[in-house]
Length: 184
Image (cartoon, rainbow, N blue to C red):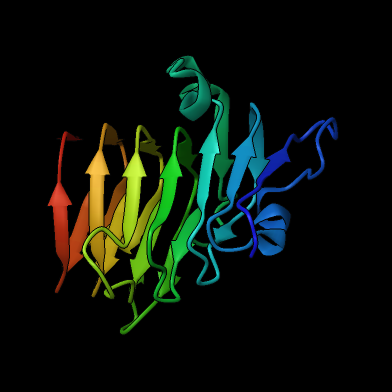
């Protein structure tokens, strides 16, 4: 029997990991990746894992951690990607910015901030909570692109994202989602 663990991430090296992606790769299903404040210049992929990635906002209920804990995609793809049929995966308490999306089924990039693709197994497969998604670009769904997936949104603020074709804020296609407290 394995027990869920918390993997701590701090960009200054004061915790066991300095990058979010390294902690995700080390995590097992059910684990939590707890990210301390900082600007993380990376593009994270949940790689099919049922994990929670959160800032200190999740443990303290202090909303100031949302603006202090940033995933910056460096204009190098989606900031956050769920592309491998993730089930019960959660992202909580971040500012998501500077993403450009991935090519999916056509010539347009999708999901500059967050790409959720093929996470269609169960209701609520992916959950985004208390995040600000801003300053992302993509062909479609610059803030969030959700394709063939199940998604729950709560306390999400999506603004100032830019799309070439449509869905500057979001794009939903063939989905099941529970849209709670969804804010633009």
